[in-house]
Length: 310
Image (tube, one colour):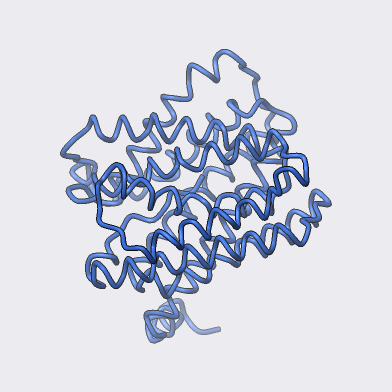
């Protein structure tokens, strides 16, 4: 068997775009595995308890990275912006975790694709960015995809779907704030402070509904924390080595992972409309990313902060 250094050399010899695509595919698989695991645990524990422990263990998983970089790696320029971002992100997470046991994993993933659409709207109305007609039309088409999934008036919209949709603009707000702080702070600092602050934000809600997890549940939660951190780092690496427009389409694989795992573990069977709507939303997101690349140029876009793993 070739030594580790040989495997590393073979990996580095691959084209950067291919490595970025493989990192993105791994990030999607890890993210779906996290959602499947968290959904399973939320069937037994209150979602706020699950959320609290997921971030406790996620923070612990970041310790080796922080220790390697030293305390200076956590220095930030505007702590208040990180606190605000964590509050917004915690609110979105609370809704997300509450909705997880209510709807199929594939639908959770498909509705999660709407977050970039809200990011574009936020860039227009909050950051006052200039957005052309083509990007606006892509956002409209993306929301048409959302309507295809939910089919209001033709099918009953579940409480879980509503909660998931409300969480999407909150995650978008978190991403917009991440873009702002990323101008001055490192990705490691942003991810670590988010994990620490979200953990503290979850404490009041967790105390109100406290349940002590069993040993086996703690092991699953520990794994969930590691999966969430690994997913975020893999996605960050994919954006580091390849253009976002190159890795964006591979994100649709998350729906495939979600469908396969959801069916194998929970017996979920997403309908055809979920696939069609998700494809429409994802096509709109891919076009928006392309227009963003054209507008900013490759050097600016490659430094964007990827959406955080849940």
